[in-house]
Length: 198
Image 1 (tube, helix red, strand yellow):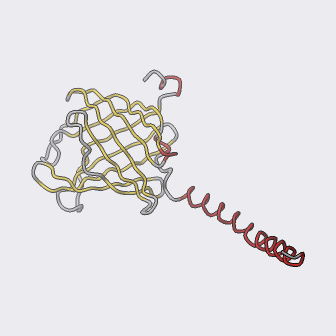
Image 2 (tube, helix red, strand yellow; image 1 turned 90 degrees about the vertical axis):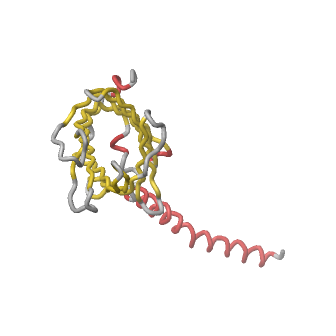
Image 3 (spheres, helix red, strand yellow; image 1 turned 135 degrees about the horizontal axis):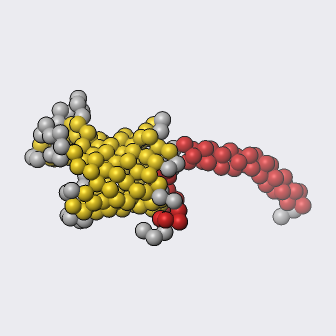
């Protein structure tokens, strides 16, 4: 390679670097901005240990007005830098002891969460719910079979603060025209030092 060819190569490389360098900053800014607003951290508020109080409607979709109360804990652990989490629920009440697991997974392509649940009594994941958060409120829906009938099931997260949140479950037997609330969970954060004993 001659001296003039080396000089042209150096000039070309310098010009290329000068053109690409600003794009690197733009790409980093765009990626950071997108990841901060795309929904993958919507459940970060729920990470930690919680005391939970649950009101459950006995025999939903039957006209029942009987509610039973449960108390216990809900411990949620972050996975994949917040793009997934696992929650473990243990509650006691008139209906006995209930153990349940929730697995929440974020899909960056659809920007939606899937919520998957299992109870220790059957050990299988149920039908996933899908949805997202908008304006501080999360809404998730699926279709299930209840007492031989196809129904819609809705889970709404609201009243979210650093130390409390609310999760309400409802059933609809008429395609979503009307909803009957059947499960209300009100969680209060357990201080960090107390959660280490759970």
